[in-house]
Length: 410
Image: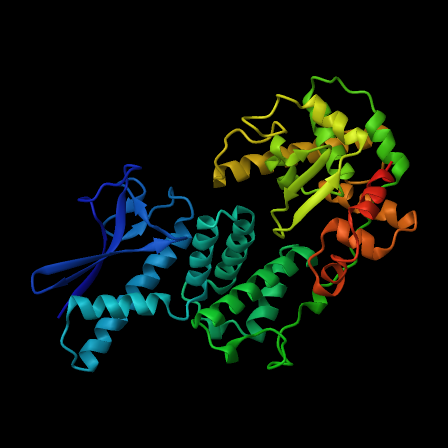
């Protein structure tokens, strides 16, 4: 009968100088190798990071506990398949083993499905969604204690226990809500893909009225808007025009002038998006086209940045043209630096607010509301995706009223 071992295949060196970690099946003098994967990639190691005798990673390997858990799980799955063959008196074949092993690995394992979804997001270049998926998956693994977690094991009891586990680690309700919504999205996707049964859906729904509800994680959002007078204070605050802080302040103000524009969108703006003093672009988050009148203050900022961005980009945020995960993280780093810079300005001016990009967006909306503009106009300006709010009004308001609203932000 066949035997199973964990093997670092030193005959197949990969680009980083390591070797793939594989399940090695031996039968009648012949061998079959199946690489063990994680996050859409095969595990790999070298003589320092991997203990060949034990078939496990050493402590010097990043995330060695998670990786060793995957190896142990895979080894257990392989042994169970061989036991099934023995008990059922099924003749062994490499083809039959591989089919069973791959099917067993993919079927009903929620953590592996997370890995597949992250790989899909990476291929689709939706890098901003990968982090919440990865963090949610890691918390589930740490809470469960094993990579072998089935969809049907994630029930009401599991979710309430996970929630308590996260709260005990001082996670905020809003943060836990993000994890739970991410997990809910994964369940819905798995059901559509046929990898999870609808009866195993653990969240409150029409078919499961007693399921887990996110309502207990609702919280009052902290005040995010500042006054128009405080925006003017920020605009008039003296800074050296050649300083990074001056640039960061201009990023923030431009977002405010353009209906609370998203930072990822201003990073992607190119000069071809400016047409006759109007900004025409497609928002990354909801794939909606925007057509915004550029008020004089916004045009002044554009004039300052003329020729400063990489290639045809308006703002000096991106350093390469290709949309890669590395570029995403570089952009996020600039965003963090900008937020810190804006909070230093707020402190100097005595403004009691955390001046993130969300403040620019909420201030734009609140300022117009205080001027008497209807919620419908503001919703359209913000581009909310709710069918009950924004979509119902998209055809009712033209650019004229939104242009008027845009002029009124100062």
